[in-house]
Every structure is written in structure tokens, then in C-alpha cells.
Amino acid sequence: MPRNALLASLVLVLAVTAAVVSFVEGNWFGVVWVLMAGVASNMAWFYVRKDRIERARAAEQQA
Image 1 (cartoon, one colour):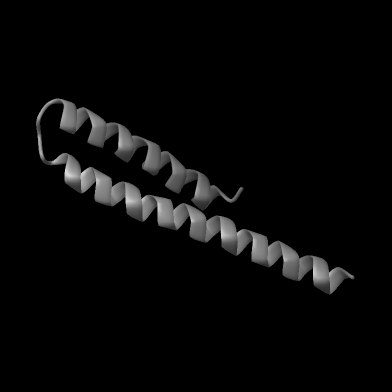
Image 2 (image 1 turned 90 degrees about the horizontal axis):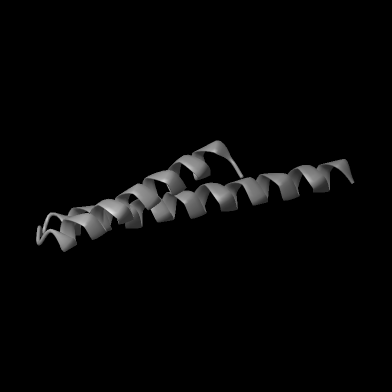
């Protein structure tokens, strides 16, 4: 897994945790954390997919 995907996944986990804590405390600021988690999730999938495509292209060129 590429480093950018791992970092985005870490941000995703932290944002979800912060959202849960915010909502448990009754703070509506958790909505911002949910949005940040969505962006981080999309970034992680983007980098994983990009890495798969690059590996497939490299394998095709070697064959």
C-alpha cells in the first residue's frame, strides 16, 4: 500500500474518532470531522487505485 494511502487512512481513523467524541460530548462540530473523514476516505481509495493501475502497467511492459 502506498504511503499516501496509509496516511490518508490514518487521517480517516482519527477523523472518525474525533467525530464520535464530538457527538458524544454533544458538540455539533463533529459534522466537520465527518466531512473530513469522507475526504480522507476518497483520498485513500484514490491512491490505492492509482498504485494498482501503475503496477498493472509495469507488469504489462515487462511481459
